[in-house]
Length: 231
Image (cartoon, rainbow, N blue to C red):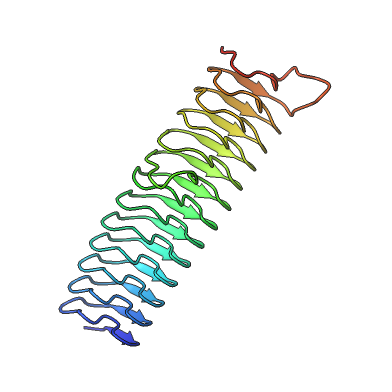
């Protein structure tokens, strides 16, 4: 069966699962028929039953996974609450922590996407990137690259934020923020595009705006002080 189990109660319930590797107390404890799984760390992949081809490294990594497959969780409690979701990658302390049934997400960084519960095909890269203000975020098709990018996003989809705190307060759909603190104060303004340091940084609810250029306290030509204006 090509199985390896090292540690107290590792792969304890395994019946027909093959190519299983478990190191650490209680790692893969309830695995029965799941195959191709690797768990390294105390109670990593602890509740897995039939999920296959998962990799969990770290204390409680992928702890709650039962039938989800093709997941990678590396880090302390990474993908902790994932149950049936598949094809997720989480690397970092508590990365993807509240992910339960969300598929095809990528979380890279300390607490990256920690609040994402459902929704699919999101990419969050950076310290505290992606949803942090809730444990039930449901947005899909979002990209956040940078420290605290899309920090407040809860249910909105199709957003792109690249840079430190880009789109930080955003809760709405379809914004593009590229640059440190671009659209940082935007909450419900949609269909906005900001390119540059603090571009459209004061915009909150204005829609359909485009700003290109860095913030300049002596020159407001790139609409940095726009708050609620649209189009």
